Length: 316
Image (cartoon, rainbow, N blue to C red; front, top):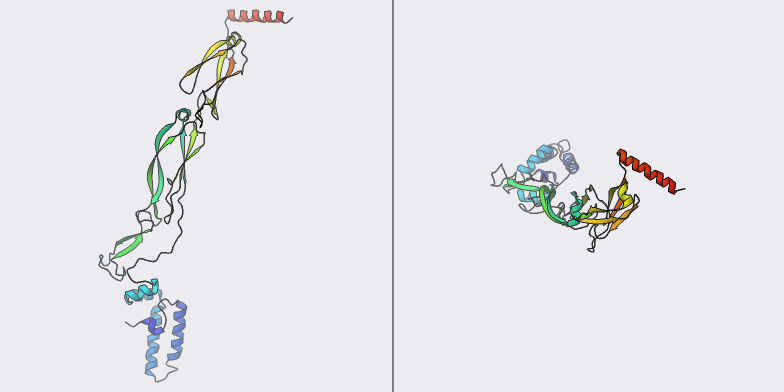
């Protein structure tokens, strides 16, 4: 079949406008009305018309290029390289993967003693297509032998079925980590390159483990110090007593309350708070609250009345 591009005198990469302009010039030059009795001009006019009818139609042009173009010329003109070489890929700078932030709930005792555990989380990793976004499959038209459809390769490139052309796929990852003692609520532990994979050979992002300390039913935390409230009766407050208070270390401390201990009085126990980075411990603050009875016996009421009377006489 004739080379329609040569007939019109255009390059294979010519745009539709260039093809149309070339045809008009030839049509004017070889039109039968301008060349009466010239059989050669008439033949060239027919060739130009035939070439333009094919190259001006998108579908006809596509079929013509596939079926009537030498494969080496085709690759050279469109890709500026020899056939069967790797397709041209424009350079794209590496993009670092996104960071991952996970929240982990821990108890106050976990913070006191430290702990080691492992967590499972979802992260994006580089696909088996190695970030090329495509997979090579056997050409169904030639069953791997090589034809025009596959450009003689025997294979076709399709969008990767695992990552769907993204270059990354999701996988469940496992991370073992150790929680240091005495960390603050909301602290973020950083694990380098344990986040999502990057694009175009970019490095992985980081994983941040945000520790959220659950409230304790007895202790309240302020920094490395612990606070608690201890209730006593008004008789113990007046007469004084010894109280036994538990600590976060599963131990007990004895605090001697003097007579006439006032409500909201706070006692400090050293080295019973949380550990800090210097391996010292904070303090335990025990606040005393006096609890009044909701009901007294008749004898207890009489004693209270007697105490009131005595107090009144003493104040005179």
